[in-house]
Length: 451
Image (cartoon, rainbow, N blue to C red; front, side, top):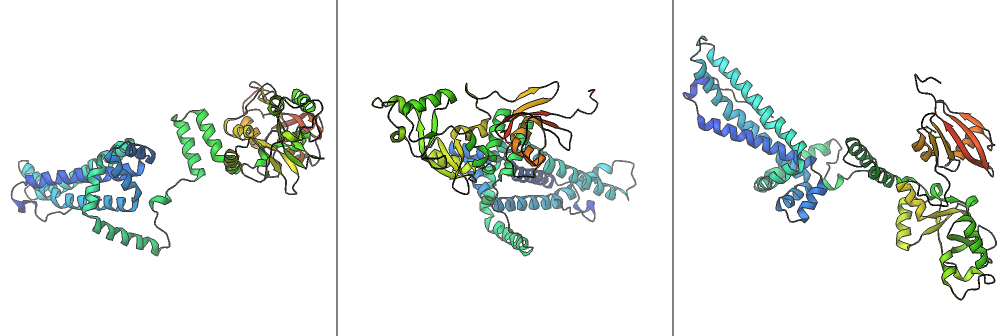
């Protein structure tokens, strides 16, 4: 902002006022400082300011206080910018006009036009200096070195706000009343928290410029999406559970453990819908008084927490950590067993597939032909992330196999082939019971490719 007071006669002052020029230079610097502190506090990373304040930096304490009352802070900065701009126009421009009159008086210009030319030159120079030194340069500096600028200017700015606080409060209150008159509630500091979607955008930008490693970005992105994933989508489904009857012996359990490679088993009474607890193989091996071949394992069963299939993973993970539960039983809306969810299942949502010697082979990809072979039980969002295919948002199916059933309108059979709207070819290569076992996904040819 700049308001210029143009003297009617630049010669009226007589001689150049060097005091006025010096005052104008000071006001120009002050204007730049107010602009810098405003932009610096707005662009500064609060976490870094808080870290410096905790380390005992008094400048950071002042900066943090300014961040806690942003409305007052920005009103104070605008007051400083306005006063500096008004003073610059009132003091510097007339003084420069007198200076230009003296200089131009030595030129061959006609005496009658010298005052007008002097005023134009003075106005042009003051506007130029105000825009460059008082506005643009401080803004660019504050954006590039936000924390450093905020810390450097925090203490003098705090003194300025303290001295003029009553006036700043008056101006800020009037501005807030005007904002409320148009039915908008002014934003205070505590309302500036970012939503998960905003954090995801910031994360994408940080990854693009290389300030966050791809692996770290993947984990943080997955953490932001945990609240959108339900337990029913991440669990091991009922049909894949290796469950043990409560009448089984220790020897029976060890045999199942050898066949499956699992160490934890849900234990049921009569049928799988009546799960009574969880058994860990190590309890069998550490109980020296147990006769493995004859003694039922019911007395070694540990309690298991039951959760609805609709429980989101964010809150479920917190609950599992609080209860120190390594697995929970997922139940459907009718109270029956839907599946089992382990801590490993939740962690895989954060860091990707955690393979061990008993897991199936990872999805295969042929880079040349752009062909993937994936299990039918893979979730739709994971298939999209792995291959780039767009399976759309329609339908209720969570898995690739279920999506194919919805597209075909019947249960899949080996050899089924489906072509998506954008040219992807999906072929069922094998079955596991009534669902797809392995599915081949072939990407459409890129434009210009020779088949």
